[in-house]
Length: 400
Ligand SMILES: Nc1ncnc2c1ncn2[C@@H]1O[C@H](COP(=O)(O)OP(=O)(O)OP(=O)(O)O)[C@@H](O)[C@H]1O
Ligand SMILES: [Mg+2]
Image (cartoon, rainbow, N blue to C red):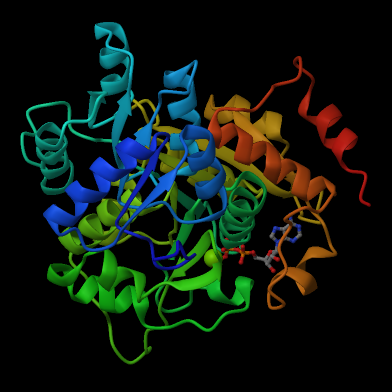
């Protein structure tokens, strides 16, 4: 069965030697595994394949031809979906290598020659999760919230363009969840029709599994998806906290980043999302009200909680707001760093709200700042030596 963009094969094996290919093929037949595919190759071929195709749930990978197996597998994991379970095979029998591979999240490492009985047991453990006394596979995608200190400050603009850049320029798999089921504009930004996906997912938590969910996504491109719905104003929807938690848990297994755009105004459900999030991108304008609410949200998020981070972003800076405060004013009062300042760009509104355009591959001040935010989130931002915000702001504000 071919590897398609939408329908992943359950198991793919990349093996260098014909003899191993035969042994694995026989074991897979004996185990009656749904859809599987055995290919000739190793880590290099796997990286090539999964850079442009969906990765399977289970992967068998031959590392015999790899001089630096740990860094090669780490590169491979970058292009695979986070929930993948990997069985490595190779010809080096070293305790150190074994330990490093397990630390990397590899389910098991088998030293060649592959013997049918041992391989059969390893496959059972891989697929059924048997013998799971080993370190469980814990790699998960990151849950990132975007929200605004006020309505209309640019939270959805950030969520949609940040995600489009991560997917389009950085090859990550992203889903944008629009938690504003009444007035959400994520689908408007991407110019797609909103379905009832989010509502259905939250109403049927017992049915949440990968196949069920995938039918509810709206695809923007092969790496970027939306989960949203357009609730009727006549009914007040009340979702329970457990279903949103379960939903986010599933999504983080199949996407590198789950971006949740939460509406301004808090409910039990938004609080639960905030509690589960790894990161928050908090967008503010430069007003006094923005300053006050930035402080309250930073406090509520508990930015100092281990492993969590709130990135404060000032948007539409330099626009014509009365009584505009500077980033320095914010930092002094909040004792919190404004990590990024996005300039006001009067040309944005008509283009980015209903034509499905995004800032992917665009060269202008706003796109460049969004790229900085993408790198910041991924931990790859190179900070220049300390310059004042005003300097960086005016350096950036050369619109093309
Ligand atoms: N840097 C910017 N320069 C100019 N206009 C911008 C900028 N960022 C966002 N906008 C515009 O501001 C408007 C509001 O943005 P957006 O919909 O993202 O706000 P929001 O915080 O999601 O609002 P809501 O509270 O309604 O959800 C949009 O028309 C958007 O195009
Ligand atoms: Mg919005």
